[in-house]
Image (cartoon, rainbow, N blue to C red; front, side):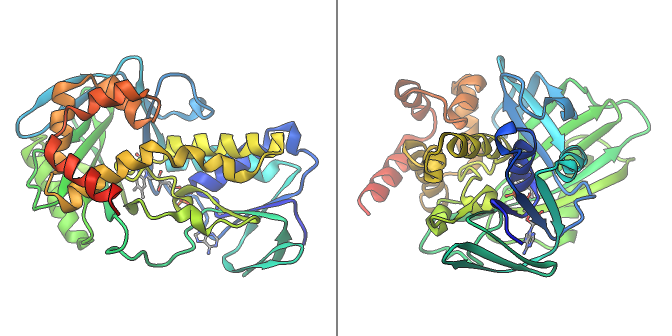
Length: 381
Ligand SMILES: Cc1cc2nc3c(=O)[nH]c(=O)nc-3n(C[C@H](O)[C@H](O)[C@H](O)COP(=O)(O)OP(=O)(O)OC[C@H]3O[C@@H](n4cnc5c(N)ncnc54)[C@H](O)[C@@H]3O)c2cc1C
């Protein structure tokens, strides 16, 4: 079957793009296929991000906070995030909202199948799946084209998460305040922090994030979670309503070099995950908007990747390099940043919306020498 566009993978990136194509008249006479192997009926992850204005998925924000708390061994601070709000969308809310709209759209065919091969042919791209063969001149692929990244050649660290949605029988949480990062736990030579996202006074997502290339056994995450809930939250009695686990790459590996004139990588596979923080949801939304603009304005799709390159990529490289090769701990970086700078300025910087002078001011906060060393190592390569 022939299409104008094929989207491979219907997770955050694939559905964000398909949802826009389903709702934009420009695409009403186009034929689009979205191919996804999974059911997308489980709450497999929770996305948080900070935003000033209303976003496209405002109506499905599950929870939002005006107050965030940062903890490390030397800092206990309520962060002033105004004019931002910290917002949360659960995976299931997102799938339940976008999937029916995509499936009902007259211009989109939803294919449940696993992609087995992608081949560029003269007229476009041929995608073989367990459900049949599909072709289009342009394909968007949301899972990586590399199986294994050479971790010696490229800056790379996995960020792994495990979280419990815990329920209590008495009020314990302040639903108006989330813990953004809590580094007080044993770092074990990695960067390890918790975040706590209270949904109500009796219910919260408690999740550990670890930056390291050693994925732990599930029992080890469980023991870290139990210990934090007992020791730092002071909670002994709780039930676990849901669990989530995942691994994402924090890397400056140039995923987008796998793009051709016909196959464009999006989401994690397109290098959209912010290398220094692992945040991706908001960047996926911005990249989807840019793709739509390029298509509508007849510009090359390569233009949509501009925001992922440039000086902010260099900053991400310096930060990752300093953490991985020059002995700066994640705890030290974030403690110094949040001690010296306004959280809203840091959020603006991480959203890549700052001017150079604002960036210079941010650079004076973390330990200067390892960052300077990393900077010169990277530019001399
Ligand atoms: C537990 C967890 C928590 C996270 N929390 C945050 C957060 O708070 N904030 C934030 O900004 N980011 C967060 N992220 C990072 C990022 O936003 C997510 O990983 C996001 O889902 C990435 O979107 P994606 O489309 O690239 O990948 P996915 O959402 O994983 O989608 C890829 C899709 O491709 C499908 N697929 C794969 N192979 C095939 C195949 N061969 N054929 C057909 N389909 C296929 C998969 O089934 C999947 O549906 C988190 C990630 C995880 C894992």
